[in-house]
Structures are given as structure tokens and as C-alpha cells.
Length: 207
Image (cartoon, helix red, strand yellow):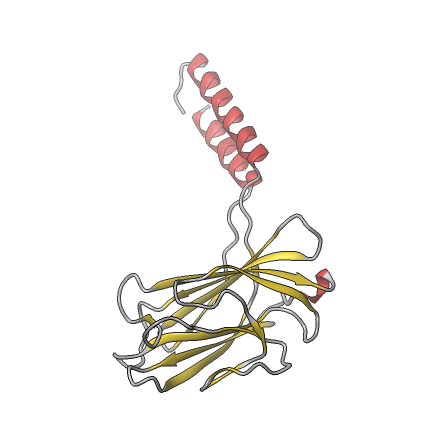
């Protein structure tokens, strides 16, 4: 009886779904993860970039500076809003790529967020140096979002303590949909587990 209940519980957990495993890449010791969440409005998505720079392997006096992302096909972005970013970053993006001097403002498929705060950027290379950037991206067509394997790309500028470029990290990665269990699914799971517990008690067993 216990074995049957355990199997049923595993099945219910599987049916409710779990968070998707986000793709990440390692560039010079920093880990980058890119994910998106549908907003419920057609063709509008929350896109989130997480940078774990705690293992950064560059210079000990380097800082995280400007960032650029490519998540849609060239010319297919309707609009982009900055939902959240670490302190010191601009409140709006500019269309274009990123070079050793910062955001370029050209007509590439990238959009760029400039660091405008004090100092040379955000600290890297120590425990806790993890940063999250969120954007509201409106695309012309849903299929324009680059969700294929390694279709998306990023460019990250690091500066040193002299205000000079310490290099631009570049890489391709997969823009992964971030999914969590629906509230209704979790409620169904809870009800089922309570029912199983009562059944086990009635049968003289224990879950």
C-alpha cells in the first residue's frame, strides 16, 4: 500500500510541472543565464539576464560595466523597457551593440544598457556578486523571439579601476522559458496529497 501511494505522489508531482532548467554559459569565470516569461499580452515578454560574477577570472581591479543582449531578429523589436537593474544603470536602453568604449548605438540586432553610476561599475570576483537585469520586450511577431538553441547572444563590458576597458565578453546562449506550476495545479496537488494521507491512515498505514 505504501509503495502504491508513493508512486501516485511521484506521478502527481510530475504532472504539476517544475521550473524549467535555464541555460547558462561561462565566460571568463562569470556565469550568464537568460530566460523569458510570457506576460499574458501577445508578443510581450519579460526577459531576464542573471550574471553571477562571483567567479570572475579577469583582473582583480575590474568592474562589470555596460551590457548588450540580442533576443530578437534584427529590426523586429517593437519596444523595450527596463523593468529592473542594479543601481547605477540607465533607466532606458539604446538600440545597438557594444564595444570597448561602451554602447555603440548602431542598428544591430542588440540592445544595450549603459552603466551611468559612480565609479567604474559593479564589483566582481567575490561571493555575492550576482546581478539581475529585467526587460519588458515587445516584438513584432511571437516567432521573432530567438528561443532556439544558442540563438540569443550577449556582450558584456568590463572596465578596470583606471576607467579603461578590461575587455568585452561575448557569447551565444539559449533564451529559455521560465515556467512555474500553475496555482490551480498546486491546489490540485495539495488536495490529492491530503486525500492520500487520509486513505493511508484509514488503511492503517502511513505516507
